[in-house]
Length: 410
Image 1 (spheres, rainbow, N blue to C red):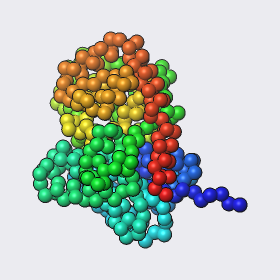
Image 2 (cartoon, rainbow, N blue to C red; image 1 turned 90 degrees about the horizontal axis):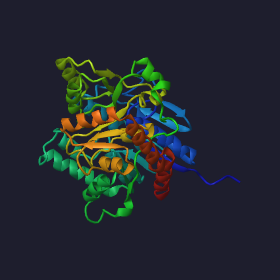
Image 3 (cartoon, helix red, strand yellow; image 1 turned 180 degrees about the vertical axis):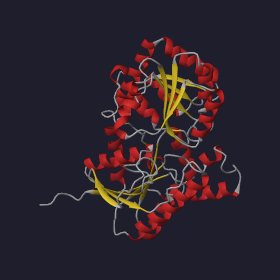
Image 4 (cartoon, rainbow, N blue to C red; image 1 turned 45 degrees about the vertical axis):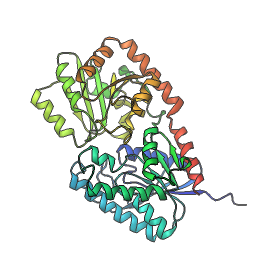
């Protein structure tokens, strides 16, 4: 006799394999993890905007997951026009495709790009398909903090109304932190803020893929001549929500130390940071592009300390995935975040690093000097971070928690 039917799930995201954006890597691992746990997973995405820019097939099966790629522009995402066109073209394409699709089962829709989850609301109304809203960034709050829209303007009020529709009609709302849960429950409003609909599931890292690795055995460190320097690593998106200018200021003050400030990645602030480095003629700052996936076990472990940086006001509306890879790498963390943030609380609970207030360049300099002078403490804190990661933020644990959400909306 045939076994019970597989649980169906359709993931809608602008980033998926082989896209190297953090969201793409996370959603790829989630899709594959749920497939291994007995789900029938389809993904509707677009062609990569980060990573491979050659032709990717419109359809393929990767690790058991059916990947459907619809049309979407691939403009420069570091410009406002590029982001708007990319988001709008993907929204139209994926909504039209899902509207005429014969597929059934719930949708899981990511919050970024903005308004993407409105497709879930429309499909629920038109086709009766339930959806899970996966909140990686809280909008329009992020747009207000970053100065794209005014806090009391018409755009903000209209955006809030659309967001309220999305949240109130979602079968489940998955958020990345306790602060984000409080914000999203408030957005739902009275009558739709049932705590049972809101689930905190932290992001994760693949602890088998990213493991502590001494510099003496780190091919990336050897290739780039980093073995004998104290390396301050920032790896990932250098976006407008990341307070990285103070890192360049710290590098300026520490230019005479045997330190290398290594930035790996890209984003809206990279050009500004490069200009700051050029103006100060800093030789202790380097920039590298996003690295291929096969390089990550070495590139993410080449630092003696790793940085997380958030602008003021971002706490609670974003939760950087790089925190979890830092913990997995066994590297101590310095978080440039506001007091009481989810990030600072995790670091304090894990005993794996320090928090420095945004703008406190002197505090950052002192923290870096302390780690440079006490390598034993760095190793202890890095090991503590890895242990905390294994207890709380593994890929397997996150997959089990998402499976519970999928079961709840079948």
